Image 1 (spheres, rainbow over the protein chains, first blue to last red):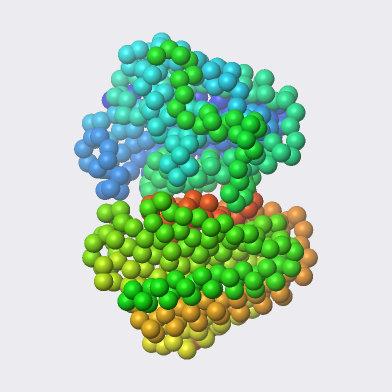
Image 2: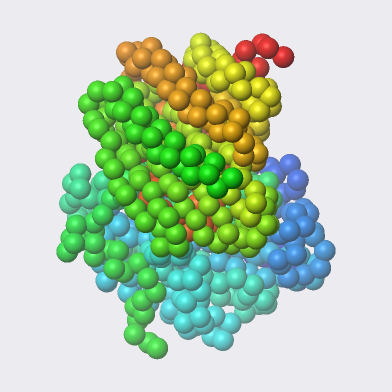
Length: 295
Length: 295
């Protein structure tokens, strides 16, 4: 079991390098920095951030492997005995400069507590303007990975879990057009193989979308809309996200946890999208939608 | 007791008008709008927001008077029997355009639950650049109100409560240079008189600071610093603020609750203030400081 965790941690470290290389190539103008950090209570990580790029206004790809004692309230919500835990993973958030290119987030992690070992993670897409082809491509690519790893992975269930998790109750909308999300996936060779495949495939789900949207022109209207929508991303991460709260409660590295927040954000009072506008069209798609028509 | 609540609600409505008039005069370029809203579960309010002013980039002054049933988890944390409650108050957040002018927040409220009636509120200052005179003027003005209403009001206790409440544990810093904060102040004529005096006096604590800092020149460096510091304001309000969480849990009006968030905000990765710079000087003052030397 411990072997599985160590192999996952090693895979996640390689995945971080590979993702950063692919994303820096996509950006073409800037490279990722690398900040190694130690957690005083055990373990550490490498934070890699690219800022002010040609494609990415802010992109973060973090790797960490930490261990220690969970706070009692967190420990009792998780499988396994006792409070000693280990957690390793890669977490990525990409905030493109162009409002035509969607934001994306992905996370792959392995946890142990007592005898329990499990995987969690997922990937989701947050567009500012709605293009059906993008949502379908993203979902189809992820569904193909799940299908290759049935029955460990189940696209329908993981897609539904994503819609449920990335939901802002106070706004009554999803964070974006979804993806897949899973947690407490029992630690097994098959589960590790699925997580590895999902991590390796993620760039194929996202980078083609960047390639086709990056050339689209946009102006002040679209940029302002993007900055306003980014506020919902902040609201989700600070009000709703279990991962952020886990990081803060386990005394994680603040700048790594909050690298997920967008670079520039607007909160304007009581803004409404013009009926019939492309902005209003996005909003109609911020709910659970069956993108692939497979059910 | 119910009479006290009704008188408080009426006073808060008048205070909202008076504060908006004083602040629009200070701004000189824009006026406050007024959006009346009804809460489906009982009561309602008037949201008043000024955006894009000469002095205020975004200023909100809300009045509300709501009633209904508290969720069980909130109800058990509060005085009084049962779950039926009423809450009225004025809440104000001012985000100036100039980084030389501090942000401020004030809130005055009255709650009833069962037989219990109590007041809460306070006022605090969040500068982007540190000017000792501003902190001292703000605190002295509030302390004079407290002194006029001893023993109901106690500046030393209310100042310490403010430092404790407006604290970001994940950043290990206070939100700003403090002010006064109080809660569960037993409903009495003397308490209402204190709250009225504090509300009436608040403009005298803040507007003179605007008057002396507004003419100061600033450039891109100062503006960028302001936008970065505003991210800490968002973090406090969404991660730490009981008032925001109370509003969201009691199904309040989202745009009124979140009007406290700054208009434009930056999150840059792992920014450090230059040692010896004015930016670094601010940070050394984000802790509990005895501004008046009275203790």
